Length: 296
Image (tube, rainbow, N blue to C red; front, side, top):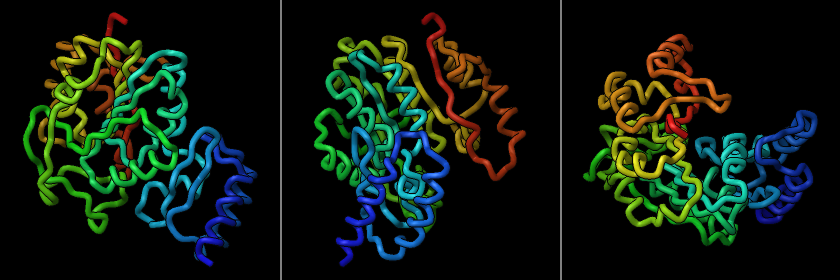
């Protein structure tokens, strides 16, 4: 009976045609009416069929994949679309730092599978398990997985993925508590890749405040290959003990990079910190920004 309910609901989802990021408000309204009727009967996982790929969604309140189930779009699907436009018809490498269940890795691996390679990295065993499920679901062979944390040097740190202590499965983070987990540098991981063979290299960093740590461990590769870097600017980043405005500015000067948005507006770290302070404290994230080579 449970399997039958899931199949019926999956067919209903197909009827409403999930999209990467665009949603029809009227269709979504009617879908949510049905969703709340079916919700008590469906069991995890539910297969959501997008146009080019499928994803497993879990009903657990704290599982980030539930967002897809409620909204019929991908988490950060608009960002995936932007990255895919940059990759279009080019041999590209996408490096997904903090890959979670694969909301970036899976669609990008499928949309340009002939020319695209994905390196997916996450310290969470739980996240990697979810990612592997989605890889198997889509029969993908162009994603390379690293179950490691990223830092400015190799070592071990405590990593917390206890959902009883965190808001959701997107909040897994290095913490004072948690399991001792191996960390490495992105430079070291990139030593295994033939970076010269790619026309475009794009890096996404969503590391719950550890973006600057990871960037420092990526310095050699950045200077040599000039990747495009998308990073999340958040209170966790600014409040991380390794972060300082001066250190970040020095790092940007050393790699000859600048901060921009997708509309080509330039920002300084000082401006981003000021904007973040002006936001209500309940908002932890200012937004995603690009790090770009000044000469390209």
